[in-house]
Length: 289
Image (tube, rainbow, N blue to C red; front, side, top):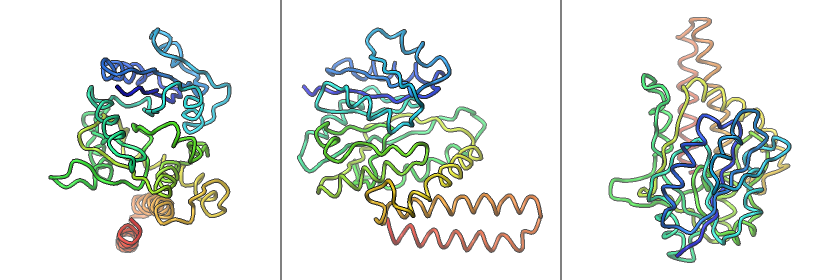
């Protein structure tokens, strides 16, 4: 039977961490495992909630360092040979960990195995969560059970500790994103695959589309200087990482132009610009993905 160390990075996660842990406990009833929560200097009751679970190992970081650093801190203390990363704001399916583990050890060409998300609206009247999920669910044909993926999605994945250390762990550029593509590309560079399974799933909670766009703008502002200066990411010159940065920039322009439509009411000028941006993004998507 496979043994796995489950690592949960958490920052101000008091609203979601309990449901996340409960879902993991249910999913590991027949799995030899340890659960490590890394509190990334939360200012709410995250640690207090985690302490209610006697079987959980809690690590507290003194400085808010970002999810990548929190994951790495948990991995450093993991005692098993397989690592499972789970975000604190998701709920995993009860058989998902066993499915991921079985696929990981199936062949030596597999570097990481990823689960597929399902969207759950925090606001039942907010249809935008389903819209945001479209790209995340993209890729599966009706008859496919798994696909190769360019990124190693950190929300819910498994990877061997040996490979994780070999490729240099998660990048730690705080709140800027891009680390999932960096990790995925490093795995690919070792001639191994990132496999995404339809049968292993988790529930992802989304806020409104507007709040998500604002988050993308913020991440873009932090990510693009690093992308162009090549200070942090080893795989910055690759197509996938370029595509992520470019798409994020395009999204920011979408928001700006949409706001101008509302403020200036000049739809006959701005809508053609939106169409041009959309066409450019389509070209980038099909060229580089």
